[in-house]
Image: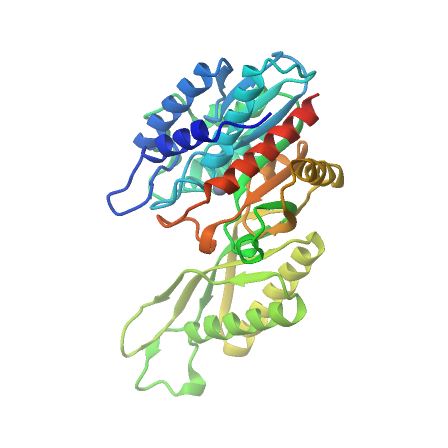
Length: 407
Ligand SMILES: [Zn+2]
């Protein structure tokens, strides 16, 4: 059995036209007008395929094939995008999953377990933290965060939900209606360039990196830059600069392969003739090992404090988000390798540096991921692309893996 690439391609292109941004790419954050349109479109597709459609309190969309009771094998991803994102990140996972269920139903292929398609809300974290939908699904959301934090659009979540059938309470309750699941599979673009460099169409993920996000500040003393001698300054920007270099040097020499990044910086008051009194910045680190995440957390923040002490500054920080690294279970890695060999597709192991819904579902069930190449490693951009022949292989592998897991 094979997927129907022509039909899958048509679906991906149709969905990719919803939320087209005049500035380029697709802008379809969860619960915006375009997302509501995309949800209605997906509902029609699920019903056309003869699957039973359901939406939970977090807006996660499901399509089920087979018995309504019993442990299901789940396949999914997300259809939301970042602002000016691409049309493949997430969408190819949901629509390939739909195509797999559609083919199995068309062939009348008998399976002993139900299959369930899932499209998770706000994977991209445009609302409050990444993975809102999958976190709601597994029941790992913080009520305070949903009520207090502002979304990336500067509005509270409650206000964004007011145009929908969902509420903060319904999001928090969503996990109560979650089906039991046996395993979760997700097909995704690699968002890096390893597969393309190696010229291999399929990546079988062995690890998904964990991440730790904090807002940090160095607080010093704003003073006149013409009259305050260099040795008497409490320059918050120099604290930040010193920490940026030392933290990067530390990770590069002690934990090569892990990542550390300062992505956003604001220096205040921010003017000529004033020594900066405050430097606020985003700070993140990532690693594929739980032990390394712990080691980085303690070493990097004690380094931040040392820099503060040396420079007469105060260092403060607040955790924004964190996820644990996930090891993909060997039984699922072997199953994907065997199916790849049967299909005669070249494959290689890859580690995911980016986070995915699969990582969140790992607290509930065994998860596995299939990557296809991202040309030039580009994602979260209008230039994001795929090669259709790679998608065909990825989706066929997904189909055969699902049939094996559900038989
Ligand atoms: Zn994604």
